[in-house]
Length: 114
Length: 115
Image 1 (spheres, helix red, strand yellow):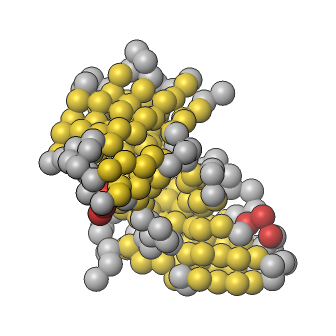
Image 2 (cartoon, chains in turn cyan, brown):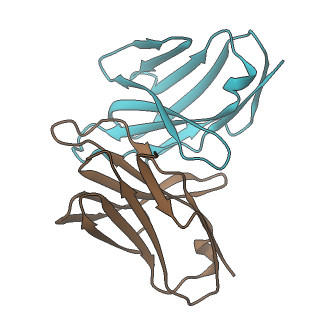
């Protein structure tokens, strides 16, 4: 069956360090992978999109990698700040689909301590 | 002003009642989606719509129905609410014409409790 997995355990890091979150998937062939940020009680907010033919994408302190061989995406936040504390969701679109439907992982909560 | 709005923001109801959740958007997007979010399960797609005449079931449509009254409005109904429909509900939109993999824009959510 198709599955997306993110580490369900919260990630706790010290301010200034790099946070790395993992998204693994099985039985998908996603053409695109997206990352969202969600704060408690609020809707997810889009951060980055990476295509299957892109290895890496950067936006300010954020970096996403996409390895279709390993079926894995890594999401990095460099020089992390307490304001980066939130839940981060990865989402896939299936390569054969033109619907724009997203399949979401359950999210990983990041806590950055000052 | 918010681009995607949802009403109500919170609702407590009883088993068997009919409930409607409403979503409006000012982004001019064609595609609209309804999700529910449960702790540990992430977001799951209930229904989605490409335009006013195109409604599609998502992953977990049983017990729900939708109506796309206009390009900007997409409502979710629970005909007879049951306790396991207690969840956080999100509406989302995306600009889909020729670009189906665009980012989605989410509303603030409706917290529904069914007693």
